[in-house]
Length: 403
Image 1 (cartoon, one colour):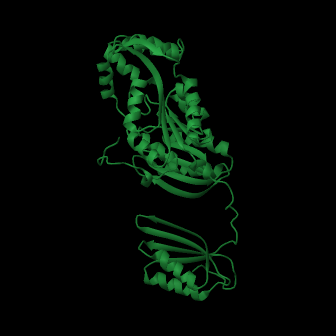
Image 2: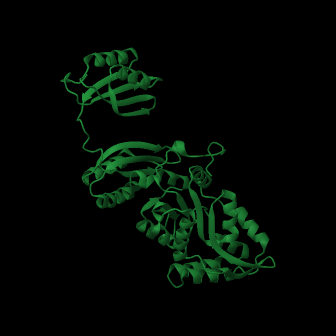
Image 3: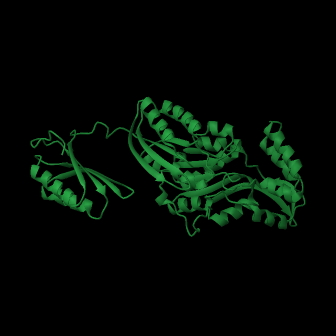
């Protein structure tokens, strides 16, 4: 028992119980408090590798030495350690807003985690709580932080992420974070590991020509629409069998099915918007039970590609517009949306969403995105949304399978 514990003060009494976890610990302790007429003001329990830490904040009209003796005796008989401390009557921090600092990576070193905590302190903040979110496919922790200078916190943590090769996101805590209800994804190199146009070019035997046009676009000699139309013209004459072969070669990003299944189970709407083609995105929508799918429509006449695109091209601005249209259809404010992409064509969409996530993105996209995820698992994004490993729906995937 802490030295100098008053038997006269009505200040709240913090009771901390530690030891090997077993059933009925909470039940028994609360029973003792109830018998003494105590009011419970707060309670929190944590179990790490079967080792229990239970904190109960209780208030009595008068501190009761008999109750303290009974709790100590109970702890002794159960092989538990019990400590007591009188604390302030009101918390100076209870009403302060929290930010969530999420850290994830395939490896998280003590040095990396120490750097995160150091930046929080150096920018005038304080860590209120740390929760481990996951151990697979990545290790992830959530720091609940009473932030000081949030802008400086973000800037400094960006450097920590680079130095320690981890991903770090800073978000407002509370309802604002938990209110996300719509996720909109890019497809090529995001939902799938392939590039649709490249697969079609291989079928048409024009990979080199398509690659050369792509390089010109990257140098700024062609805009996205111009380069896409020029590349599609090289596909003229491909038949439906070639499209079926390409579908068979499409490979989902590891964790994609798990990611979508988990979001759907939790009530999210999930959509894809792509600069690729509806002959593949419609198929993906059916395969994954997606709510919305938008892409470019390539013209097919008598079972063969004509080399033309029907209608407007889904480009950078078009993706952002589609995000707004899908959000309106779902009745979701933009502040409650999440956009995920990897290329410059996704930047407008990432910027207008409530949270924009650069997934294994090009450097220019990483530098402009609010959140980055650099591990090759799409379901790792779930932890940036505050979910825990126990929330993830793996379905009937075999052990060791990542899909």
